[in-house]
Amino acid sequence: MKDKSQLIDKVTMETGKGFNEETILKWNMHIELFGKNGKKKDERFIHNTVTTAGKAGFADQVLASPTLAKMGWMAIGTSSPGATLLGTETARVAFTSKTRSSAVVTVVGDYAAGTGTGAITEAGTFDVVTANTVNMWMSASFAAINKGASDTLKITWTLTTT
Image 1: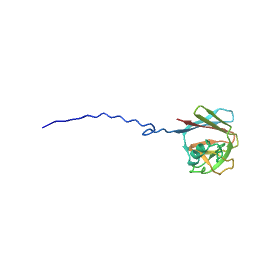
Image 2 (image 1 turned 180 degrees about the vertical axis):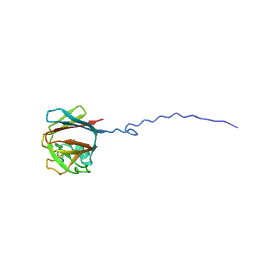
Image 3 (image 1 turned 135 degrees about the vertical axis):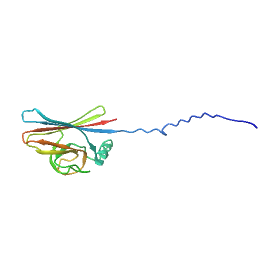
Image 4 (image 1 turned 90 degrees about the vertical axis):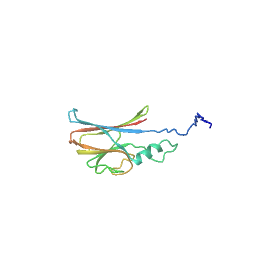
């Protein structure tokens, strides 16, 4: 009787197979409410949602001739956001600023005294100025922030690509 054993060591390497590269978008929102004297009354840090339209919009901007408008407006409301619009939009403003530093895009929206007053519970960013009109790129819902007529509200959204 013969005992025969054999060990084979084999390593296979193929470039581009079995490796996944992915880009992850992380969105976060910072809300600050100020009284008429400029003193901070409330502050929130909220993780939010990127909508289907937002994902398509960001991908579209890479094209030589984008077919979708860039986001440039922010809205607040008093309900809960749906997939494409806020539940009850109360005010929409143009971005105060839009900047990029390395892989972080920051957009800011400011709501002056008398603009968007009430118990604010939702916010979103849009690619059109007209209220209650799509496309909403990002949205968030949160516990009520009570914005009085003499208060100002600042919302800062950040997009980090990793």
